[in-house]
Image (cartoon, rainbow, N blue to C red):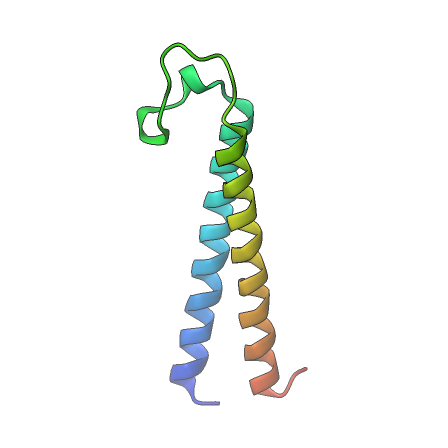
Length: 84
């Protein structure tokens, strides 16, 4: 395995881990914070006391997908190095 492709898989792994962490954090915010108290970046609803569970569920699912892809890139890198 060339050093360039190893570096690419390493960067991809860390980008996916970071994206998964961000998606998970946003999903938890959607579950915990009422819609009227959400930051405007996340789409606040001024007169709503409900939580945005659909968006929270979507973010948690995206986090899971990102983490699964991160594990897949980690395993692929280790296999190419001959460790696994």
